[in-house]
Image (cartoon, rainbow, N blue to C red; front, side, top):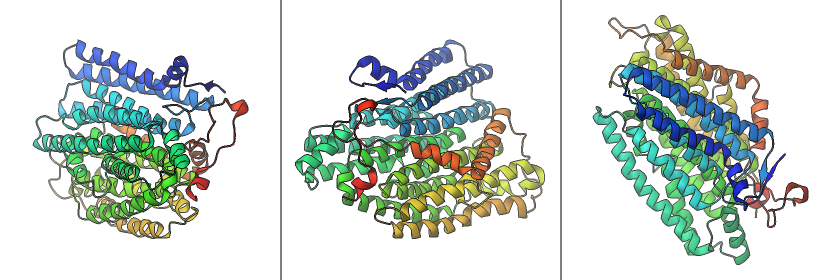
Length: 516
């Protein structure tokens, strides 16, 4: 076990080792990408090298996690919550690049920079997962967002892509203004941007009712609401997801959302537990509206990408239920849910990559009778739909993800009965569009003259079956995953916790703080 004193520059650099590995490797690969002329072979080579770099970074994260490193209070976190979120981010990065290699081949795209932009966005996400200072949160969001803006508009020949990218950029800049102004007001109220220091100063100086602080919190909530696409800040998501290349849509729907939720939870837990009532009422309202509207509008969709866009909005509401509990159990339920959601989302988009043809949207009609011509493709898509719905057994880890969120909500110090009821009812509503997808694949005959379903490319096949296998296997033995998610809860520090582990003082838990 190693302890990092983050006031020492060399220790701070060591604590940022996975982030530095990914960033340095991405810079080198960017030079490799532009060094040669564009060609299909070159983009595949850069893609494979990018997957290798993400895998090396993942190995670095696992090494630091299992060696049980820890650190003093500082601008970044050295805890298992960070490592668990990094694992989800890097798995999503590998899946997005793998799908991107095949999608670029299908579309005739030869730009290798796509893969490097994904790596750069992931480095911002990893910084976001580690941030324990509001300025680091802002830097992580901007590093992530700038790369994702470019990724959303990569398909320059598509009007839908250009429209979605412009909308994402303008609304993203607008939400960033809210976020930055909120940070400024919180700094004005407390005199600091460190999450731990904000918490201590609010408690020491009785700032719980400060108008400046409460306004800053509200603006911060708007900024985070946009990043995780909660209602009413979700209007950009369907158009952006529909217009972006399929792998990028999966990346935005799963990985970007996971990183933003990680920062959301850390800020909520470490800085503002003293304002539990203020945050809680707002989060409950957002969660209920997001679950209801996301699932209700999802029922009307037949375009698969728009269907999954509204599904993503609804899942943001489910994750907000875990955050609203304000407990360690809720934090671990959120981590477990993010893993399940990421696997199911990338698997579903792998199927869309196979079915895509040019710029034409993939609809549920394209799935009609899929069982008769591509049975394994239909079975895999069914697993992903069941997982997103939270169906028992067939949904694997997806069922347990919703179960643990529901359990955390009901076992919170202030049981979230209303949220639990809405969660269950909207899950039933979601069955209307998830089961419809399964029904058309297995219970309808393929019409005459239907488009021939091509063979599944190698990297896409790897992502699809790896996600399906992980969903089912982790659904059989969820306890192992839950155990690691439980140790991945964010650290909440008490005053004087800068000491090494040998003289560490007891820390108050989130539950105790939430019940103040």
